[in-house]
Length: 374
Ligand SMILES: *Cc1c(COP(=O)(O)O)cnc(C)c1O
Image 1 (cartoon, rainbow, N blue to C red):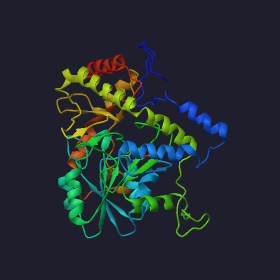
Image 2: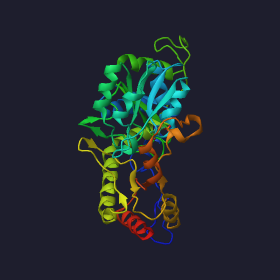
Image 3: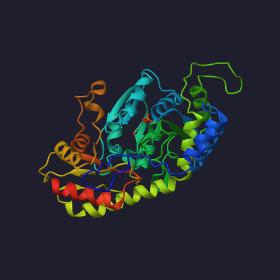
Image 4: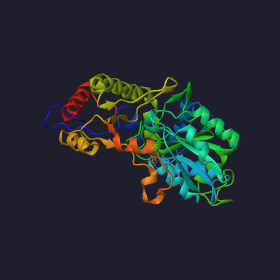
């Protein structure tokens, strides 16, 4: 699957995992020892290492990022009748998990530079039923947390960070995942580090750690086996997934450095196209980890976004559109409110290939092809 250098056969996927560390060794240890299910040493090792990485007291593994979000919401007692604020421009899981609890997602527009939830637009959407805020660190750029935390404090709301796309990003020196009441991560195959399918929750709150472990493990009492005081879920990670995760995390700085290098190459090779495309902004308070390098087509650009993506695919370059906003999706359709920023970002944005197997030559090739299409 590695992109080959010959121009005719070149295919550059938008995302690809790098599995060059101890992944195979640790997975084989699971197979050799027959610890392949959701008990085994890699689970606690991965959880401890991930808590250290985020700088939190606790990390709780889950079987994917969506169930991690569901657990976070349940841990904070989200239920029917509650409203939860969430950006309209996100991956659908952020909104779906709110619905799983019987609560109502209340959508908020984005701010244009980081594409994240607009803190100034949050307060207008708060009602007596508002229970909390799910903040998403979209494409690896942290959201502006301080004003959001201030609003949450004033209205007594919880803050969940959906950090599925932002492992290792920092906000004013704080690592994402350690800023809100609780945070969730995804380790799907295209994320910054991967376990195939997998997720994690991070928190400093002992009450949430206990409650989420209870909910995750079918509701089984943590001290009394086969005693079930509540209805729980089976949302556990397997030892094999944790083995992959631990190996990925051992090399996380390398994974992050590679993405930083890719972003730097794009900035260099696309800089002369600045009259046609907007390159990603990085706020001075942010460390952006570039899960996706995103360009926005300007008005001056004559080529339609979908047309440009189709032409790039003909040249062996896979891209993705920026997410369609939730307010346009049938389950969350909202024609009453206006979301002009999210609409514009969604209509004009393209995620370029961003992953750790790209070479400088690949990025130069992609930039050359974009230039020729424009
Ligand atoms: C990937 C992702 C999720 C869901 O994670 P899965 O592991 O695929 O369930 C949730 N939120 C955001 C923002 C994501 O990008």
